[in-house]
Length: 155
Image (cartoon, rainbow, N blue to C red; front, side, top):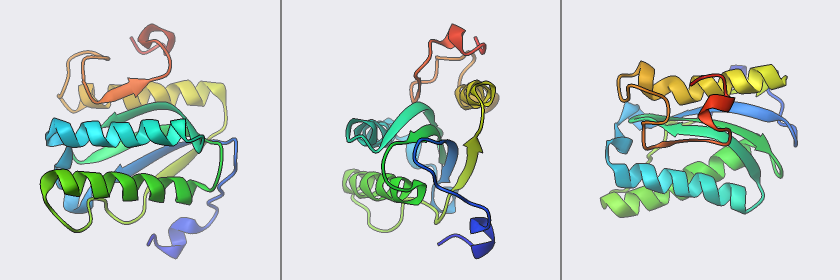
């Protein structure tokens, strides 16, 4: 459960776009296993398919995930909880583990302009490069963006 101070000013509005960061419990490197990263990406895609959200970009890093998403139905908290629950159950099944995969809570930032949307998309795509996991945008296998790389102004 997030701290009440983190909830001050937080608004969840259908149609708004949010940049979200979710962190694995104890910063465990769950996604060093490509199968776990694939599970997380499949769950993100399912949330789009189910009509809850419209994703713009995501990247699954070894111990956390960045997601740029527009709400279509339900609250931001509901969508994040649904992602964490579904992905956590499937990852634990794959690993033969029990217990939490994700740290409680999440970080979010409301996106207020097209310029900011593209900026956050570039930031998300650039995470693996900054972390030394890739040398160029688009090389990292556990990321996705709705726009062509050259259309983001990032590559």
